[in-house]
Amino acid sequence: MTRPAQILLVDDELSIQRAMDPLLRSRGYSVTLAGTGREAVDLFARERPDLVILDLGLPDMNGIEVCRQVRELADTPILILSARGAEKDKVAALDQGADDYMTKPFGPEELMARVRATLRRSLGRETVLHGQLTRGGLMIDFDRHRVQRGDDEIRLTPKEFELLTLLVTHAGRVLTHRSILKSIWGSPARDQPEHLRVLMGQLRKKIEPDPARPRYLLTEPWVGYRFADDAE
Image (tube, rainbow, N blue to C red):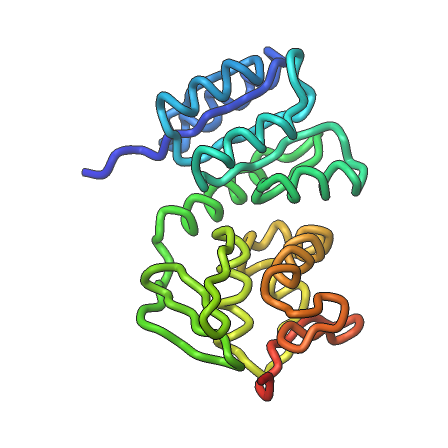
């Protein structure tokens, strides 16, 4: 029998804790609660949960800083829940390593769908590619999660690696924004293009010799992205 996925819920609002704790437990998850950023980082370092659900408005530190400190320790997925709906807040959280962002108030079923999708990807319950693939001078090692361009190794985050893998395995084919969002973040994220815009920007900075004039990761205006099948 496999252990239940462990979730660290970080929110200083008791009403949120009292609503979400039993909801998550009713779906079979193990839940640990934290009300401050410092407590959250300490609990994370000690317990290493499978998922962090994080509010940005904490009393002792900004949730963005908590996100940054957690990301320094591990690649554990982070789902942001916040009353801040401005795009700049979403971009800041995603830049610091968050995997998804939901704005309060939210529906419980949408939340659970995102939790399931995030855990399904992070715990490896989806099809996993093996071996190596070379496209346009890039070598991707799926088993070691390594990318090289020539003799240079490129260090990618798990999400960056996932996006590159998706595009490279469909080289030459345009993938729509919605299809990429669904593949990487799950169905509820299909209408949140800022997630993808931030991630693509990060990936281009690492992959492209000149990110302003990409030759690998091409934009199809108003449609999506494709990996150039004739890239050199």
